Image (cartoon, rainbow, N blue to C red; front, side, top):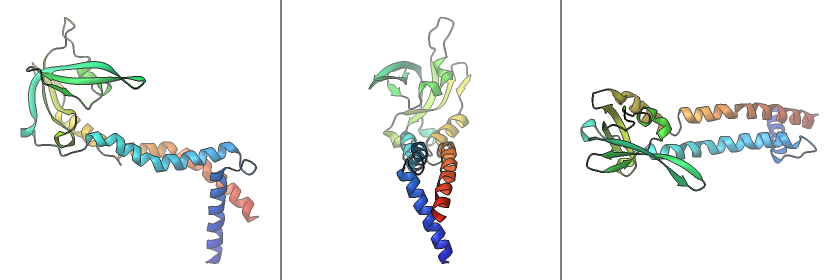
Length: 197
């Protein structure tokens, strides 16, 4: 039992030596790799929660969806130092609903033009996210002749994926940091071996 405890102490000590980054013992770059792995692993859940926050709320039943004809308008606005694309659904009676979806995520609507280069009117069903306090989410969109632009099932799956803070995005982010952990493991093991000698 004391052997296991001693071994764990050596591993812990080696970890802290690498994390503190004594260049004489491990080199500056190896310290940064471990520091990045720890920071990335601890910070990632907060990032994914922040990214998923606008997509939260109860999805109302289809009978409660807003259903209207209108046009989706795209524009670029300045946010700080960068330009950000914004999409807005404007109904026939001039009510405007800013979409939560970024223009890049809805190319079917952005590229929709008639022969004259004018954006045609479309039929949209949707609702406001965050229990009515958020931006507009298109649950279904089709042209006047019935061609589906955004299907119900696809939009439902997309909303679920975007609104899940600890789902596939978090897993993917953890997978991207795994090489840093692997490099750090070998560095810590090397330091641990030198401590045990």
